[in-house]
Length: 154
Image (cartoon, rainbow, N blue to C red; front, side, top):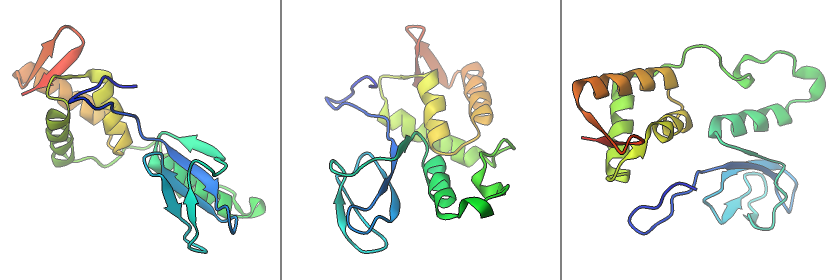
């Protein structure tokens, strides 16, 4: 678990792939929810009672697994949008600035560089570009290093 702030404990969000308890249709939901309504039959699945097939750290990976599961095995072949992208992700400076603005509000006492990059990955941003922006901010004095580990965004 991440360090607590403002008296609350922050958890990393996981995405779960599970079958509906009523009709068996596959669904994806985040670990922060208590129930998830089935898109096929409308049944409200209580997440503490479902059988989780697999957990994912990324929503993109969970949805790709759901798409893949719906395609018959003989027809899967090489499907570009289901494979993990190794190419460059489109990430704008505005998206990176928004991430840093959000992290500044969420972690007023500072955040580790690893956690910044994890948040970027979770948001689907290009981690290399975020790391380069982070280094530029350090050089420009926009981020103060504190206690060697945590970064305070100014």
